[in-house]
Amino acid sequence: MTEGQIRQSLSGFYDVFSDGQLYRTRARGNFRKRKITPLVGDRVAFESSTPQEGYILEILPRDNALTRPPVANIDQGVVVTAVAQPEFSTGLLDRQLIALEVSGIAPVIYFTKTDLIDDDRYQYFEQLAAGYRKIGYPVILSRAPFSQDGLDQFQATLADKETVIMGQTGAGKSTLLNHIAPDLDLATGEISTALNRGRHTTRKVSLMPIAGGLVADTPGFSSYETLTLDYRELSHYFPEFVALAGDCRFRGCVHVNEPGCAVKAALADGELMQSRYDNYLQLLTLLKNQKPIYNKKK
View 1 (cartoon, rainbow, N blue to C red):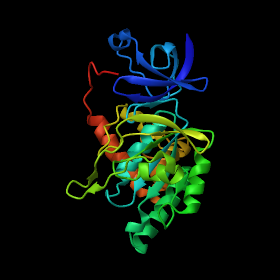
View 2: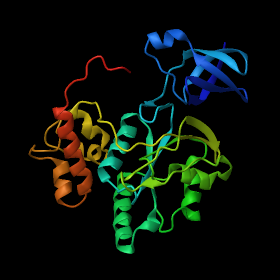
View 3: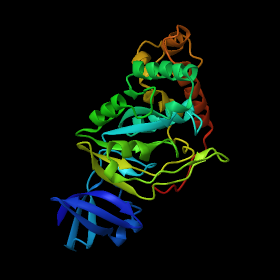
View 4: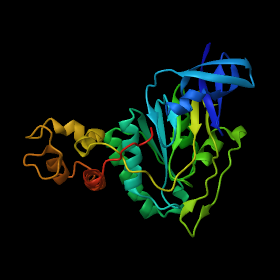
């Protein structure tokens, strides 16, 4: 029995990297009965008679995992976010950041398509980027799309890390990776103006060696699934709220109507991003009204 890492998943096959070689494997039959799905990034124990035929016997303990995109043991997630085409949404961006926070994955924000907006609109994104940087999120934003400075910063971010590139369909994930590693020649797609969403161009999930690290380029999406967590825990995934929560009058404050709330006071003083708080309230309401899902497959 040998240990390795799943580097690619496609149509029920898993390419496992071990000792400098890839092995094509399948999951054991009892995985399906136990409702276990191997993910790209998983560390696994496997056996293989040839590099073309083998079986995954065990999935070793995960550090973390994402459902969408389906990857495991990731150090950081780069949320590729278009400023236009598709239309920008702070709500979608914040949901992606929360999903990473819930999974214990460090977020990075990369804004794309800045050539499609005028200077006034770009100034809005500069202010937005400053707000996210104040929270502690690394943000890559430049006036020229894929500028050398931005690409250099992006490459430095990837080194020695396992990174997932995630974001809405059509945001420019594959285009970004093609600028870093042209030999990849990843497929890119045009935006459907009628539907205001991209055509899916990434058909498999792969973990590829790029810029001194490993990078997952994953299928995009046109919406983000509802988070499934207790509404009282939502504020735990807003770092700027966590930093202030100790100063709230009541322990367990959810920062809505409670008196002596340090988060509401900071918001009133302009120290917090209004869009973040508005998105928090919207998600809080959704989670409070969310009906429990029984017999949900893992």
